[in-house]
Image 1 (cartoon, rainbow, N blue to C red):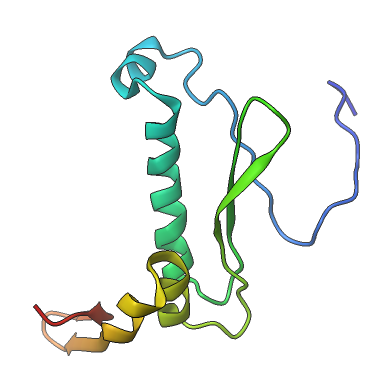
Image 2 (image 1 turned 30 degrees about the horizontal axis):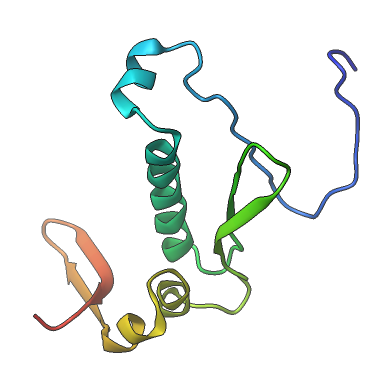
Length: 119
């Protein structure tokens, strides 16, 4: 075990911690401007995965300069369905207005399912 890496207690599953993602890429860092912009983009990706994999628990936290963290997304996984996760992310009012749809085609082979709302 090198570089100070050692076993430690943790919850079951996979934990990803991202720090200084673009510290050595000044062009990317300048294009983003603020740390909050990049964080919102990462949060959006995590939200999309949470909707497509409702049986998996997701949590996204932003650590500030202090040791405190703020949950910006937390899903429980297990028996949740996509509508439940949508309710967690965007609120139950929106989730209640959505209706499921599914489209399939044999030729060309194609399938699509999701949720939509009235105009």
